[in-house]
Length: 304
Length: 304
Image 1: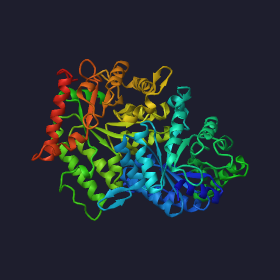
Image 2 (image 1 turned 60 degrees about the vertical axis):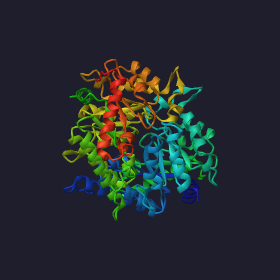
Image 3 (image 1 turned 45 degrees about the vertical axis):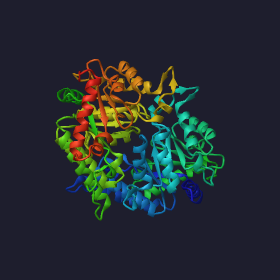
Image 4 (image 1 turned 90 degrees about the vertical axis):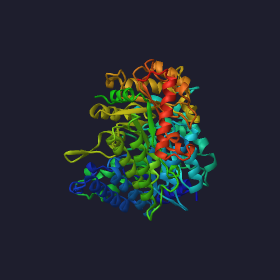
């Protein structure tokens, strides 16, 4: 089954288009959760994984996916990367769809190595060994088609998916992305190419395994991209802490309430800070349910 | 001493503007060099590091820098990342300037985590611990200024540098990079911003710690960027295997024969395949010396 169809089915079944973002840092952990040992990086990696595991355990029945931001793991070296791998593996085993938010992009031969690392595994004698195995990874498009092909090949051969950065959620995102060439902004050029890269990978849901990252903080651009890219599934960051609202985000969904998944990281991981007396995991679940209701309401009760 | 001044001084002293690229894959290793053990990833990481160490030992007196492409290490999981770290550390200890070719880029808070990972180290109680410590890292500019600032801050505070992707060496590089907005191509917009991002980081050499990646395969664009960006040091990939020539590359140097460093990976690592009977490390040295002469000659004998 095409990964994007699995994504659409999981959203429909759970009636929730939310990906919990595990951008976990030790400063986010509840007081007393992290006790540094002699090897700080090792104990940080272990504490971060323990926290992620508790969150995955409590949200796996109510959300379809998690998004794991690799930067916060890389900064703890190989021990951090071990926590990244364990988090992806644990989420998968818990039945969640996994998105490795790695924003990789390079020339063809190097892009192939990244595709091995996150999507297809690496040749190892007569076997193939996974490195950091995820269902989806995020991709930076700056290098163009020959830097994308190894990823789309990996999608096709291994039932995996990618999300290409089209319109990012940050304030400076428009600096290059909004520059107008041939009458249309750069992000629209990238969006149109994203739709094209997915042509051979469209599933029964009508969406392709080549999705787009479209920030919640730019709802009008999201709305125009939604119309322009009928087969492109959107990953929408920027809800909550970054200022994106459910009403704005709803414009990036199709008229059946499908075609997109919304990420929230800090607001769910740190929900316990706003719920005194509630355990961190229970607080995260409360916030995930509140977010689900918020999105459901903005979508007029129709999901997927 | 500003890292870019150290780079310029090392190039001048060794009369060689070459960075050896360690994009090491097990398929590149000489026959018999790699013997897979029970843990394939571990033995691959160890063999790759052993190969890199031998190359570093033999070229450290004749080249100023190495560039290590992380993708080929990520694809072997945490064991690969350990080899990446060991390679960076070993090259530094051998007196070489290290470039982590990671092409990271993300929104501000995440870019900060990447800056920790590769440039400044990560807060760990009352200390700061390095993760994958390099002198320079490569950066993808698609997210604009707020995704760059954490890196330039890290450069300023830790005497580090970055190379921003401006005009990449691959065939599809122009797909988005050559689109013309407001009368100038996208890569030029990025180039001008790169010059600006480096304004506060200019060293005695006249160059800033914020450099640009400019592919050897586009010599005319390199020439125009050289004129347009007087304080921007260039990292030039694409020599040799990708088709870039010394004559073309010379146009990206300033009129003193400085302002750029040229990377070659495969042609040096796999030089032994074209030198029967010569050990792989000696063959790599021969090729590095041949490349130096090739560049020196194209630059009219003036380096740095």
